[in-house]
Image 1 (cartoon, rainbow, N blue to C red):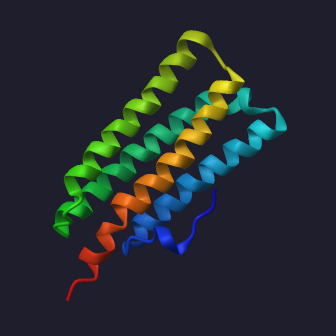
Image 2 (image 1 turned 45 degrees about the vertical axis):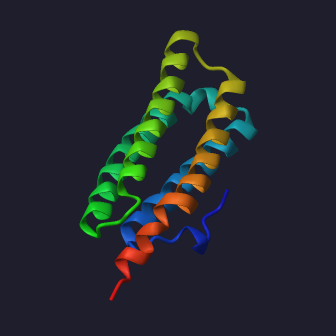
Amino acid sequence: MKWSDKYATGVERIDDDHKMIFKMSEDFRAALDEGSGDAIYSTALEILRQYCHGHFDFEEQCMNRYRCPAAEKNKKAHEYFLETLSGFQQRYAANGFDDTEAWRLVDTVDKWLDNHICHIDVHLKRCVTRP
């Protein structure tokens, strides 16, 4: 999945963060294609979790600052995504690397990003550009 202008929020740092998450997913997908997903899976999960925590905190602050009507929905969606990541981490801790589970992770991240940004985050753009 690649970044496009349809994902723009009007806040450069948020857009840059989104681009980075897209890149993380793309890089992990490439590692899986090359057969080296097992070597980076645990690290990729942890980096994604930490990055999303910081990004979500900043994005939620922006939504509150600009009085975005999607702020509460955004916060709940972030909580859901972090719970989803936690589930992947727990399954990895219990069962080790599983190729099918790793592919499910990248598919989950890509689908969530597209859905979340297009249906929630883009509402911020109208709030940032209000006269």
